[in-house]
Length: 101
Image (cartoon, rainbow, N blue to C red; front, side, top):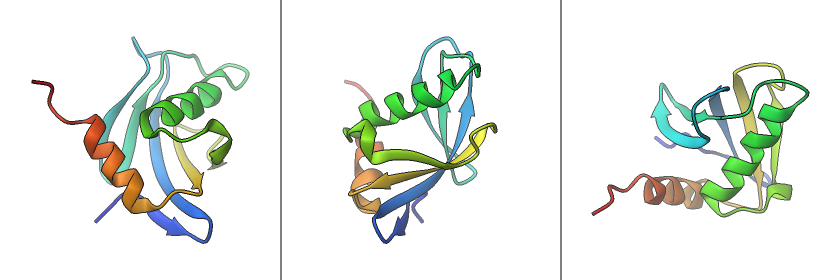
């Protein structure tokens, strides 16, 4: 089962954020949630902005297509991706977690 669920306009997923990490990166999947570590602190929306930027880079989606639907002040957020299917997101997540040779 994919962590990305279909919506009428794209896909949604739950994300667990760890602010003040050493570096910003998508760290994998645990308990049905995407794990994202952020270097930014959760001050004045900086962590939320960093999350959108990190997801944009990781999934090759324009930042304008990513929105935080719930959890603005929480570590667990529901993020919506507009104009991209759950299957495409799952494939891009798998590609970015391939072992390097």
